[in-house]
Length: 310
Image 1 (cartoon, rainbow, N blue to C red):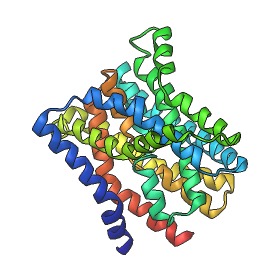
Image 2 (image 1 turned 30 degrees about the horizontal axis):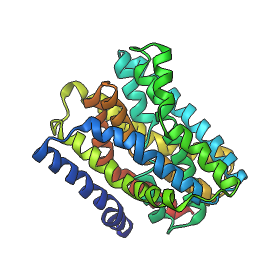
Image 3 (image 1 turned 180 degrees about the vertical axis):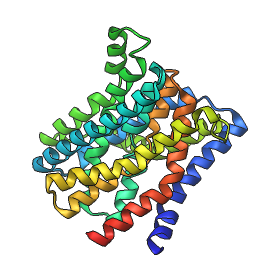
Image 4 (image 1 turned 45 degrees about the horizontal axis):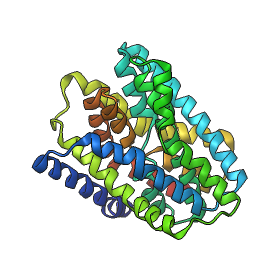
């Protein structure tokens, strides 16, 4: 019970307050959600990814292990979600929305604070979480964009959209500059820090604004689909991660960090993609909302069991 209360007060509740502020602002002023989504995609997200990758020490062995885990985890999740899609007989738009709601999880503005809380700021687990965040930031800006547009745009147009995403350039640039020890000029370092610091708050406010746009009840037509999305993300996710780290024979600390990283709710990226490209925005918003609320219980349970074992 003590762990539950601690997580609730120090991690989940502060994020809930930020989301509530976004909801309040939307109800009061009717903010432009598309403008906010563009700020996240083109400015704050690439800035925070570059900043963290440039500053954090990550060994080549760790990178290899985490990337192997991530590939296995995404393949396993994809198999499960594609099975559900076939059983439910979704149309093209809903197929991509369901995939995004399960495969894209909140590894940044939920995962990083959660990691620091669960592992007391351990540098190794933070490095692991940053790698997961990196891959999770890259995929929505490549596969995610293709996924929501494949049924309604030509391949050249989709490729142009993907190539316009700054985050796909920020990741290799950060690794190169760190590898060759290239310093960031102070006139650039200061605004980069400002943008990086603004990411979490802006992302949570954006989620709140989108949630403020929708009805606070799940439509009967979406109830089953939103429930399936939440179960696949919050329950199947950490169970699959546990199976994979066990098969890989990873040490307990690395395994625990990866399981916790997989237990977080649906990413705001799924909402931003849905809004930006007009694809099942209501389902995407409700999936994020429901999974975020349910994660209060499910994430706490995952950490509780891991602390018993580790």
